[in-house]
Image (cartoon, rainbow, N blue to C red):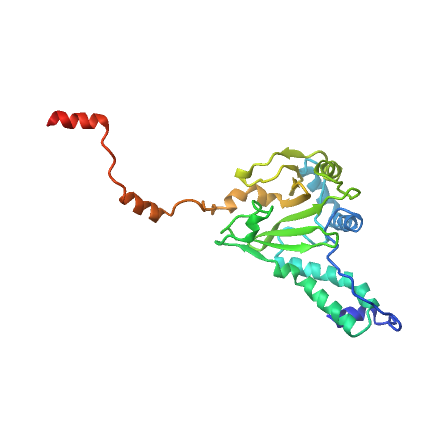
Length: 299
């Protein structure tokens, strides 16, 4: 990997350049709010438009809101596997680390960069969580309700350079949902509270969204605001100290009930075999008053 990166700047002289410590780097592309993040979003949308104006027109006609929203970084799209997403971010990390390698001297400094780059590239791959038959620790987080068990669902995660936590959700290893968690900042692009964030999101996502109060029993644990495009459902969740913006494949969302055929079991429900055994040991019920009177008359 080092040879591949060094070849990009082999002609650059490294004499006299020292690096006291290599600063930490994260995947910057993909968070659509902020300066560099906004550039990534625009690049992704520009790429989508370049695929054909006629195709875009047809898409816009189908989109009642008249607003197109592209996932970023460029190349990220629904249907991708976790490994494909990891490879996409591998390229992003290579680009981000290139300036650091240019400043580093061969030896311990480049060795440290090699180790850090390897660590970052493995983050998505190591983060995979399978929602099979066994409950996971994710149930104890605000993400509960975004997945189901025993239906072929998995999840991965990545920390972006901006500090945003990004989660990827899959059905059969095909991406169907991207979940971003943003911290509020007083002078940040999303404001310092949920009301500010929704106001700032509205013009970017096609206008005021539809408010939906929390319904914990239905798996919706937070108040949220929703937008729809021709191919996407976008949800802004009020998580109190943070804002979650969720991008969902609309086709999957509309047929979600049929895809989640296995329903969660009540963990507090009594085992059927135990219930049957206890029922056998129960004393027979007392005869009703009318039955006692009839029996006395017969005697």
